Image (cartoon, rainbow, N blue to C red; front, side, top):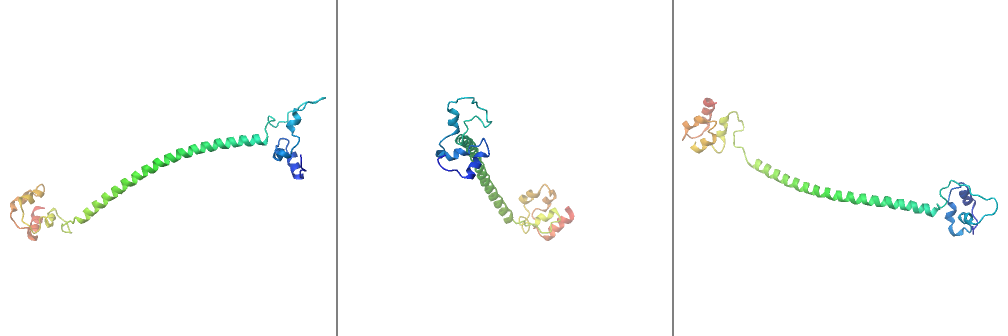
Length: 180
């Protein structure tokens, strides 16, 4: 090394035979182990496998591999995100349509409620007989006509005898008494 290493740097390199800590010192290294392995040898020198990989795994190589895996993972995540965004866009469109449909339905309901509330039921509040319908504005105080009889003909076949009679409390009570 072209610089004096600290005790902690030396300990870090020595603690694991397979570590590549020395790679972090980059240009300060003058003699690299890879260079020593390539020099011709004399005598009884032979290599013993270290069990540290294929020998070409430097920190740079490991970092490059890790970067490639991270890049691959990132690309997969981006693809999944695009798919999710497309699905979300479709869902938002459906939700907008549902909201519009709901608003139209609520508007119709409001209109029907207004119509229902504005339609007053002119029947006597104590309806106890089918004759109480004669208290409605359509009948009460008016003259019994063929058209009015037609409205209630199916239930009141006997009313034809009273065509021309003025509808009043007495006639309604009579109908209640005799035709119930």
